[in-house]
Image 1 (cartoon, each protein chain N blue to C red):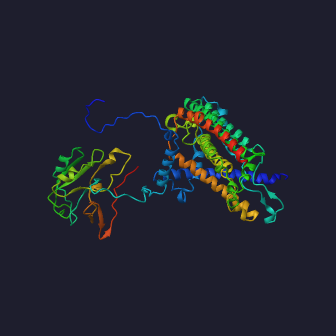
Image 2 (cartoon, each protein chain N blue to C red; image 1 turned 90 degrees about the vertical axis):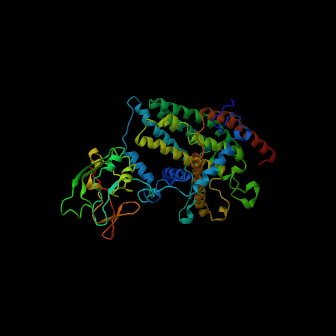
Image 3 (cartoon, each protein chain N blue to C red; image 1 turned 45 degrees about the vertical axis):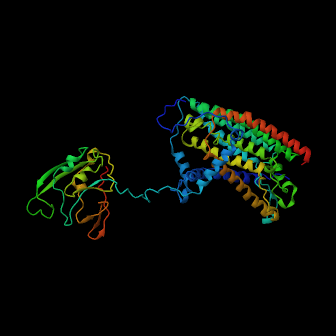
Length: 355
Length: 192
């Protein structure tokens, strides 16, 4: 299939807009949900149900005074948040949003591929970009020339390194399950379109979660850590680091840091959904005509993503954060051995049941 | 532990090792998540303040009012008992004799020509209300308004006396009816 450049540009623009839009409304949802979990009402003054709140927040952040500390490294101080946001947005390029859209159904003449870039090492690309993301925090925290932000940055980088290992090992089991060309996210998702445990009536429910419950748990915990979300939000630590790596930031640079966290959440929800929850696959969708199957696939996929964003927030407003030594214990002494065990178990099962 | 204990409420805490299930954290986390999920659907307790207001307690003591009787005459005779009883020494007054032709303004022969309460000194204890033998001073539900200037906090008769033609509410002592129509009493605000 030849690649049509205009399609890719259109899709990239749409994905970019959706990522930012979802992230903006995730801030609103976060505040609303936080309020609901605490028996409050939450923002309700800007627009109906406070729906204009993200816009009001954005305008406020843009209008604030831009402060760059006198003894900071000015270039790196600006690079930090930009890099963080850039990497947060880049990851969504390899996510397959749905099956290719057959445009001949509406008078077009080609298939509209619903994935910006089908790289055969897609999952590796995600890992590479996510691990560059920590440079944004690192550079921002270091350039601020403030001991608290440096401590936040150090915590962020050590946490990322510790949890990326377990995360990568959890993924290896998925790659093994997918088999041929298993690093392409497109292949991983399309491998989940069959019937669950080979039962044809459950077509579209062949999700990896049913084969990899332990791997999913490890991946989910690591995803929380990679996004710096509670219970792993040690880099920010309002209580003891006063904001951590972004303590010296103001105006929209602070906004970028905070906003990129929500973009990260959106993208990692999308990755979780496509790796473990079948991406755009859903039982019953195969009965639809192909064009509508693609459209419904996007909806199903977004629904799964929203569920995981909700899960992120639900966990944040339920449990407090780990202590630093507990965090390291969990990463190195629990998750890493478990992930290795998971690989061995998966290999054993594949050998005996020849899936 | 020693046998000497003032109460029997003391609990001795011992540090215990976590059991295997506890060290998994996950059961406790799911339990916590169920609790927060329940709160998601609970009735919200927020009061939308400027639109909704909670009722004051029946014994709320706010800004003072100097009452008039049914014929619109000031009750106060400037006896000074309120000033004497005031623990914060917030009340001062100057007495005067009622002239001929002022019988419709003042109930008795002596009245307060000047009556001032320093709202910065007042502790809203209500002792002036208790001390008054003439039913003249009451504490209403009105909140004494804020101001930027200290001298504006000395409330004279212009701010304290019940407006002419109004009748005070039997419970809250706020003037609520004027000439048979509902009357909204506002503290004179002087923000500059």
